[in-house]
Image 1 (cartoon, rainbow, N blue to C red):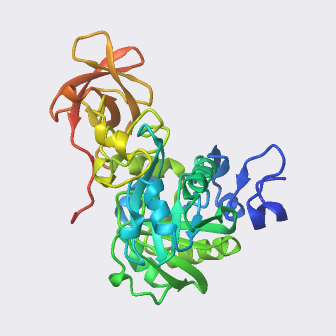
Image 2 (image 1 turned 90 degrees about the vertical axis):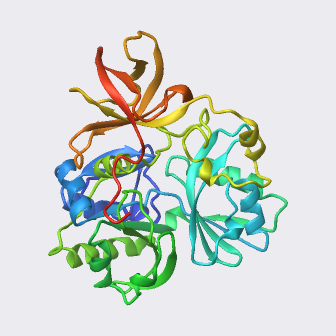
Amino acid sequence: MGHEQATDRQRTTGQPEPGSARRTALYAAHAELGARFTEFGGWQMPVRYGSIIDEHRAVRSAAGLFDLSHMGELHVTGPGAADGLGFALVTEPGRLAIGRAGYSLLCAPDGGVIDDLIVYRLDEEAFLVVPNAANRPIVADELRTRLAGYEAELDDRTLQTSLVAIQGPRAAAILEERTALDLSDLRRYAAAPAMVADVDALVARTGYTGEDGFELFVAWDDGPELWRALLEAGSRAGLVPCGLGARDTLRLEAGMPLYGHELDRQTTPIEAGLGWAVRDHECVGCQALAESEPRKRLVGLVLRARGIARQGYPIRRDGERAAIGVVTSGSQSPTLGQAIAMGYIPPEDAAAGTMLEVVVRGAAVPAEVVPLPFYRRPGR
């Protein structure tokens, strides 16, 4: 089975051949464009098509197109769906208006993060929960357990759904060429059903890049048609296909956490700077979060000398040998032209302007604590 053609089994269900990672419905389209693939979250995903920097800059200046079909799509329905999700998550999805979305987290009883996710309210008794790809089975099992006793059912439709995102300052203008939906009425973190390129879609004004943009949920087999239609519509506007490499540098500049980097079972939402998402209500982990003191803080760092911080690099106080923290994500910022990073350090060292050091390949590189995000799009 080569890169040119997925099997019928993979093309229609996303199920892998024995011993291999899953392929999205768009795999063949990516291969045709010369994508370099990597395994991520159990899926074969494009990491880049050409230059990661060029893809990154296209999103900041024009638009980029992403295949996000590896993300989970968990539909929770029933009279008790709102209350059940309120108990399961640190937010209260029942407070969302129909057609609105919210960022949330699934926490363990001790407050540690199991996953972060987006919740869309599709109807009075219908919600769409979108977890990270690698955590989707864990989240689905945990939600089913927590929904027990509520009149609610969970239907995992991940392998029946393609998800395509168009992000960047020209995203709305490009998308408008393929849909009659009035995008000017679609607010940030809102979603509406619409026809896009003659395909039934749920159009959400959400994203993970720090730019304006849209995520489009469609039936699995409709993914390639939608992908090609948007590429064609954006061909003269600077739209380019983008892989996971650019998605990672974009979200880092925007100060957005990634599970397995900034978030894990040993980290609470408070420590990750996500306390704003925790509502005062009865939920799994909420009592522990209300009673706990943060042991660490997530901060932004800008390196003030040559070097690039990577995940796992030690953070030290200036001149001291013992590490006080660790880098969780780091890269050279294509937009800012600086080496930037996020990492955890003690709360007493987290004030903006504090000078620290990151140990880069054995050398101590000065690093300044700065507010997050590193980048904010114009007008925000």
